[in-house]
Amino acid sequence: MTHPTDIRRDHDQDRPLLLDLFCCAGGAAMGYHRAGFTVHGIDIADRSGRYPFAFRQGDALAVLAELISSGEITAYSLIHTSPPCQDGCALTVGTNRAMGWGRDHEQLIPELRTLLDASGVPYVIEQPNGKAPVRKDLSLCGEKFGLGVLRHRNFELGGWTTPQPAHVKHRGYVRGWRHGVYRDGPYVAAYGDGGGKATIPEMQQAMGIDWTDVREELTEAIPPAYSQWIGRAFLGSVLAPAVAA
Image (cartoon, rainbow, N blue to C red; front, side):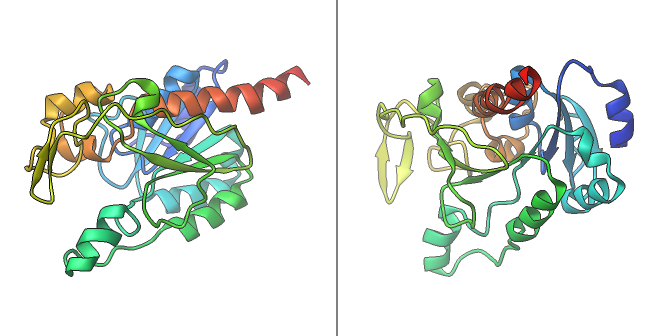
């Protein structure tokens, strides 16, 4: 496992460093890399065989607390976080909870936000639509980027802001079965299994992710186009003015 100190020693000094917490297989990471960041990922599961950048296995909250305590967090320009969303996602709070299905899920966001605020580093907390306790400072949809998924995602921005882009009108339905009715459409359902859900190749193509073929990783990923847009917005509104000053 690689330690953050080693990452900073080796990373391109011309590129700002981003900490990617709860990184999974790196959908967000790839977008930030394309925007101009050196990326370092943390995940409790071993993603080292597929995560496309420097990776450290560990509990994201514990690693963040460690970096704050040691002062190493100051090397990072931005922190992106995608904490587990099952407690607040639309499926859990809607159909599953109403039907008495599923199980209890731990909500990590309040503790995460406390640590992020203590870090003093600008941050992003990403969550799907639902009732997760995040501010919807920014919302993005796959149609803005011409993707084959809608995949609406909300982002709480800590320590920085950027204007909300217009929500582009959808071209049709998400393909698949819902409440006993099958609809065709230009988007695939990149979650779950069965019922007309997307195949692995379909998810890869729809989201622009070709470095993992693990269904669980694809269903949890955000398309790199989202974080590339966010990364460029951050660099243009925060780092570029600071450098110019």
